[in-house]
Length: 68
Image 1: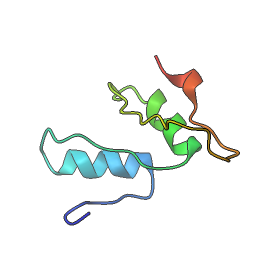
Image 2: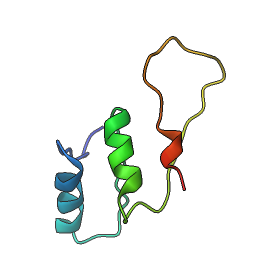
Image 3: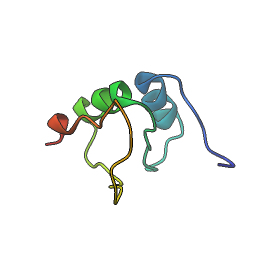
């Protein structure tokens, strides 16, 4: 996406967002470990989750046990 900023870790993404001095949301894209870390972070207030209408062949799933 044009104009998007990227980070290689959650702490780096949060630091980058803080440095912009704005109230723009951070969107986390990753694998299950990245989602797990982000969902447990105290600044995580919302999760936007897409549900697929059919079963897909996969071996890693969203860590639903971390949703609160």
